[in-house]
Length: 456
Image 1 (tube, rainbow, N blue to C red):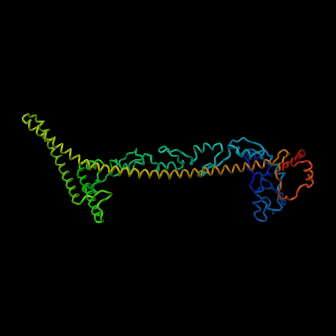
Image 2 (cartoon, helix red, strand yellow; image 1 turned 60 degrees about the horizontal axis):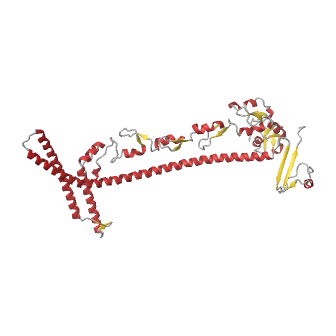
Image 3 (cartoon, rainbow, N blue to C red; image 1 turned 90 degrees about the vertical axis):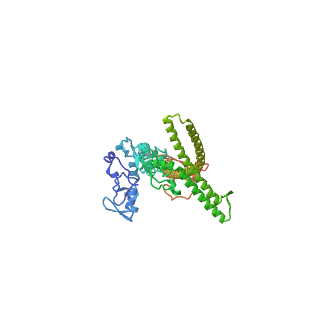
């Protein structure tokens, strides 16, 4: 790593000899060159020596790898320097020896840390991280006001503009503004919708209704009410034709029944069709006669003439008979209407089921994407925590064999491995001395080293 970063206050008072001429930071793992005597950070001099021979930045002297050595004395001096936190200008008032600054930065509230959401990548002060995650991060999870689904804030507007099924939208035909997006298709449906401005032709044109012009909703409903009998007759004729075609096909193939039911013969189908046609015609005639009789009764009542009481009673009796016949015929017609209503109901249920399955599929797809993004975010956070734990473990291991007061207690367990290169004083402590004084117990050796630093 390059040199230590300094606050403005420290840089103005630090001795220039303690600054690396390459990175201009405070020397980190200081090294000195034999040729020119200048000092560099260990990492910086490695950069200079990427070729076999490097050049000193200060005087241009040749630097050879074998002429560079660690300057332990300068390193101890630098680690003992009193420095401020590099975030002093932001408000941090910490000041202590350089060797303690790394521990401070691990908890400093002004240190810039990355947002835990992988898609964000923004660096924020540690003290502001919670506020950033709750209010500022574009990838924080927010609840949609309409469907209550948790959505990343960056995609919330897009979700509400084009995806959320509960957002109220405006019908482009009638201008109605309170229709949920999920119900808009049903609202403008040409057959069963309730949009007053949608124009369509009579749905019965497919089976023979001659009215093929486009009409608005109210006009089309009025047309259907006025021509209900004719439409039912067209429907019956269509059904009879289907029966005839199916029966013909079945008979040609040698079958006389379908699903256990005997198919009617062609003559029977023609007779049924004729009966229905006659019944509908008779129904229309009876309605016309009834209307005439009611008009006549009103005229007789308005004239207030008492000379024709018997005729009035006769007309009333006739009207009742006609009404009874009409009621009977309308009962027959109602049966056909029930068939039509049942067919429309089944068709509507099928459409609703298809719509429900489509919404569920869309919702499942959105949930899968959201869970995938959450998993990636959690994986990134876990990776950061693992790195922090690894650094902490390494720091703890270093502290176990470190001493800052000249006294080191070293515990060695199972010490069986290849001998290292001999160095130091070979007569410092003979092995026989260790065995005679029983320094080894239970396959464990304790060494206590005391260095007198009084004259240093």
